[in-house]
Image (tube, rainbow, N blue to C red):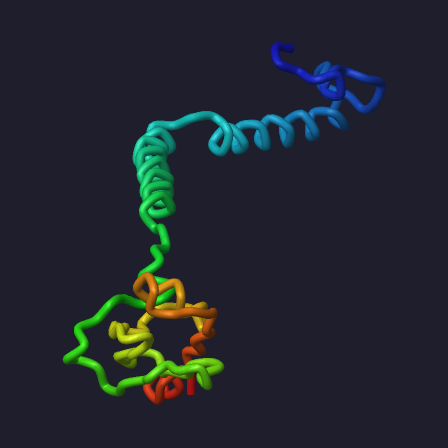
Length: 160
């Protein structure tokens, strides 16, 4: 018997015209199960069409994910904010010997006066605190001063 398994070969038992009835049923069930499994495991035209669509889609997703990670670099401006025009400042802070730290709000534009120099900064960065020397022009500060950036009312409303 071609393709027969050892269980399907004739063994002693009830026979009708030379067929082992006990094993014949198991051979039929096995054959039916193998034929139904072929639908799932053997490639078909339909499966081939799906794979032809799936593989380029997966490749495109992988390439786009890789390009996002290479382009998503955080700059210093993203962390600290950016320089601004003094005329757009919402308030002015004079830095003297008594100044221990500076507190500002997120999105606030502040003008600083120190050692006869002036500079303005927009605090739109992600940092909650940093050293003012990072943004001050050379010679404007004679010591380290910490800037603390607090969330503004809009930031607090977004979280609530």
